[in-house]
Image (cartoon, rainbow, N blue to C red):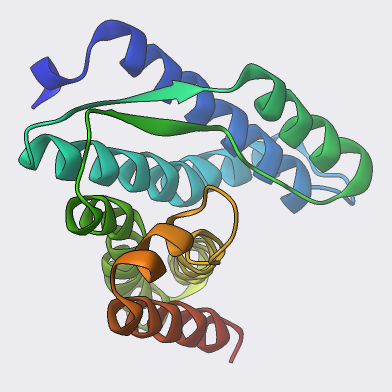
Length: 194
């Protein structure tokens, strides 16, 4: 599998993963923290936000490759910098770290499945995080809650039917699949706050 991810793409994914994890760490420690808390929240961000982001992008890539297209994630340095600065100064994260570009003329159905692959992956990732949340207790339970919430947020955000987001392409392909994924995403997000 790694042979299908060229070195430049691996580097872009790694840089985006770290930048997003730093941004979320800054959110978690806004009120100040000792070094142990800082390390804990950075590792938690790597395991929750980072995994959610990387798996989302790789799902797009491998779905496209399933249909015979080349696809590659490309980071957006400017948006990564904006994410970290906004987290540090405003306490919010607007993370648009880049995108997975598909090369070729995918049909509407292929494009729909390729676009749906990311949010579907985030919804699937909610399951192990729910298990950690319900049965982990303490810090493990906290990691589970954050992982559930982050994956639900990424799925919900990406399913919005606007601009270049996945939701617009899924809706253009199949409104029933769009509705199912949107309801599941919003449901998971609401559930993470209950």
